[in-house]
Image (cartoon, rainbow, N blue to C red):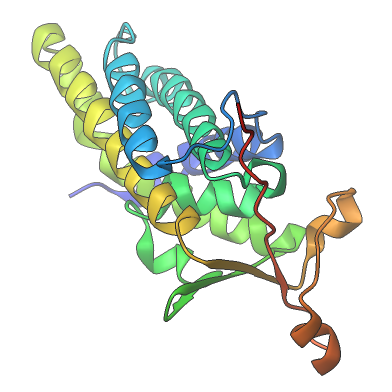
Length: 225
């Protein structure tokens, strides 16, 4: 069992790395597709293969982190591209990205700001303090998960295979979460913090009439021709 005190300095480092990944959502390279789920699954397989092909580092916990950052960047671009296939890329926020990247690894933390209600996902935008708290929790979770991977680096062949396998299947899990979220008819935002950051949203007439802070993510129409 890993001693948390031993890896405590790493928690903040991992949290900082995650924060840097989600700070700027990468622009999508894809346009709205007629069959977005099929296109998204094909895109996910390509991204997973690319993540698995990354050359591993050397030894130890801190040298596993650069590998993870590279994997997370590939995954973040993949999420943005999947959003493009669904015509929702212009509305993607750091909270959406955080949920997609880590829902499968830290579901007990992400459910604090993402709730599925029927066919709707309600996403609560996080303040700076709340975001940092979630990032720290995810940092602890990720550090515990990769402790074994770091130890396996002392056996280079096994270590490289372990990282490649982790990267491939972790990327597919991220894609699965993104597809599930983006395929919902109504993806909504509570307390739209992102408006203060210059991101434009359209409020539904129903919510406006009720005086609610909830707004729906608009879907960009497919390009024809």
